[in-house]
Image (cartoon, rainbow, N blue to C red):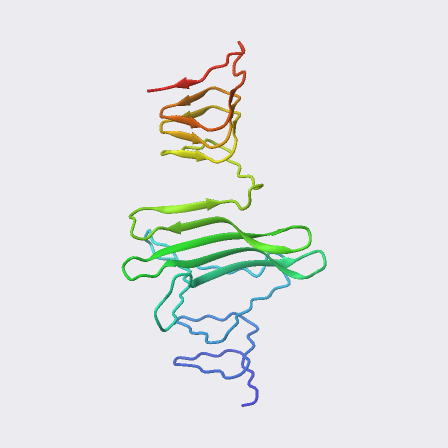
Amino acid sequence: FASLSVVDLKVQDDLTVTDDVAIGGTLTVTGDSNFNGDTATFTSTNTQDPSVRIINTTNDATASRFTFIKDRGGAGADGDQIGVIEFTADDSAQTLTPFARILAEVSESANTDEAGKLIFSVAESDGTTTAMTAGLVLEGEHATNGEVDVTIAAGVNSTTTVAGDLAVTTDATVGGTALVTGVLTTTAATVFNGGFASNANSTVGGTLITTGNMSISETGADNEKSITIAN
């Protein structure tokens, strides 16, 4: 048939469509589905739509899954991209521009010693050229049990803000000036390769090493200036 219009269609076996199909109502598929095309597009003119929902109704503690699979058909390699989620919108010239991206990669592909990498990037610009730059990178270490390295921010002028307490359970190395406006408490060695300035009480439970200037300012109602080194 060049074209076929039906009100209700029930297929109990396989259905192969080699051309376009338009469905004006609800499509319900009770079996597995395979889509072999390159692009699947969901479009809506309604606000906050289209919406994609993945629902698990099983009465247990496990969740639904959204899985990216990269199957080369051959041996994998370090740096292989596994999956990308990209966020694109209009700029002021109505040019569709990527503004954010989540990328999963293979960090180490060696069999039985695999490690992964997850990169969160956002667009940043020098005023004329926009580039996608990683602001948060999580990378698992291979041949080292239980180690995941985290890189935050990009560029020496970037600012990382911690709204609550920051707990460092091992050594802390500061390459620039450390300005503390609250209480600084450490239980391990603290190394400052630049200056150290504190506007509040500082308690160091380990070794304090600074190769730059150290400044302790007024910290209390009595204008006390103190530094405490705890055993």
